[in-house]
Amino acid sequence: MTHQVLGKSIGQWTQEFPLLNDLMECREVSWFNTKRVPCQQAITDVGLTKADIDDAADRLKRFSPLIKELFPETKSTEGIIESPLVAVPDHRDALGRRYGADLPGQLWAKLDSELPISGSIKARGGIYEVLKHAEDLAIQAGLLTYEDDYRKLASPAMRSFFNGYTIAVGSTGNLGLSIGIMSAALGFDASVHMSADARQWKKDKLRAHGVHVYEYQDDYSVAVAAGRKQSAGDPKAYFVDDENSPTLFLGYAVAARRLAGQLNAYDVRVDEANPLFVYLPCGVGGSPGGVAFGLKTVFGDNVHCIFVEPTHCPSMLLGVYTGRNNEVSVQDFGIDNITAADGLACGRPSQFVGKAMGRLIDGFCTVEDDELFRIEATLHDTAGIDIEPSSAAGFACPWRVLADAQYHQQIGLDEEAVIHATHLAWITGGSMVPREEMASYIAKGEQLLH
Ligand SMILES: *Cc1c(COP(=O)(O)O)cnc(C)c1O
Image (cartoon, rainbow, N blue to C red; front, side, top):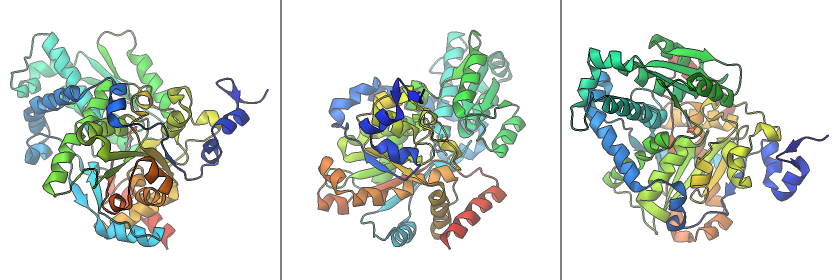
């Protein structure tokens, strides 16, 4: 019997979805979403509202005095975990020379690589979910009210209260770091189930924080399943479900209102004549999905969110393009999910992000691993910013957007608006990568460039 996926042969799949041929060959593709509709029509697909994001932001504010106390590196932002926004014009020009086209308009980088506590975008969703769980437990037990000074949660009594509870998560690395560090800081008994891609230094760091680290010689989905299983049936165990968590999603979504303030501070206008294109590296889909949802609630149809994946793991693209979301994995189609972009190595997309965001995402780009290293080296040379390979993905995409006249037509973008567009690559991780490892990434990129 020939190999079948959901009852259809690969031949039937490629006939119905011709782009699958390129995906299965791991070729770079850009796919602009034919199912995209105006924001007003699709924002209700999400099942969450702007009020939910406001609630998440309020919760982070309540926790900020505690965060400031537990993590002195957040003193300068009063316990708010936020990253800088910087323009990278020299990087834009260098990439433009290599891609053979000048990019009109500005290119910005949102440096979640510099986020305090865990150095990646996971410091938004992951930490938020741990805090929400801690608050829920403490309030249910009558040990906390919303009006309290949350610094009381750092008391020895509260730590021993939290120590009676476990938190578990499956991760390719960065989510584990965020959940593990924050859980341990509050006193929880934390377990992180790591996929084969996870870097050794991330495991070492977690163990140094007293977190239990379980290692699997397998895909991210297997690590998640193991964490889920460990927590099942234990009323004192809490599992952070990266494949299906609205709480993580809301933690990410808060980023949008903060970004709006930063853009405003730099007089970057976002309106119909000045559209904003945001490029978000995508693994299971939670972080780009949550950020994109937030952006849509702030900027509506004037923001265009494009998800970026490695050519060896185009899982969210596969799910949205075929409409089968988490029913399909890249492995079903013989795609190996082996990539240097470890943070993006999730073979099966999120259960709910594809459904929630399928009509709000503008499109997808896939990028080869070698190109990630080249971009990384270029950013190092032109801006002195060091990032991990997963984070470099977004920078390949503005030129794809620029070149695609059909897409411009699809979203009603005239030539003036193309010229006045602002492009923003979300840099999702990097500041905690050990120095030697970072040097080897950059050396690899330099070698590929020359
Ligand atoms: C996790 C991660 C992403 C993608 O987030 P998902 O929620 O898995 O889609 C992107 N970049 C880095 C560095 C990450 O760690």
